[in-house]
Length: 64
Image 1 (cartoon, one colour):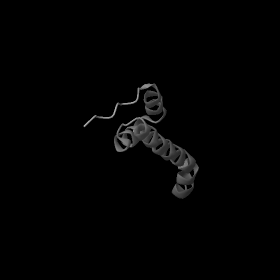
Image 2 (cartoon, rainbow, N blue to C red):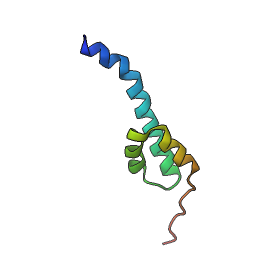
Image 3 (cartoon, helix red, strand yellow):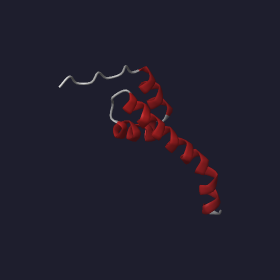
Image 4 (cartoon, rainbow, N blue to C red):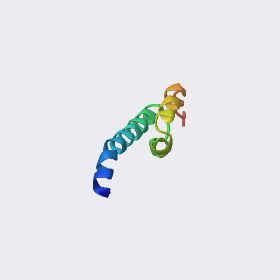
C-alpha cells in the first residue's frame, strides 16, 4: 500500500476542515469571542462548533 497516495486521498478532507476552522475563527472574532479558542475548538468539532457559533449571541464590548 502506498502511503503517499493514501494521504493524497484524504488531503481535500484536511483542507476543508482547516478552512472551516479558519472561517469559525473569523466568525468568532466578529462576535467578540476568541478567534484562537474557536479555531482550536473547530479542529476536533468542526461543523458542531460552527453551529454553536451561529447560535450564540454576540458578546457585548466592555465599556471601560
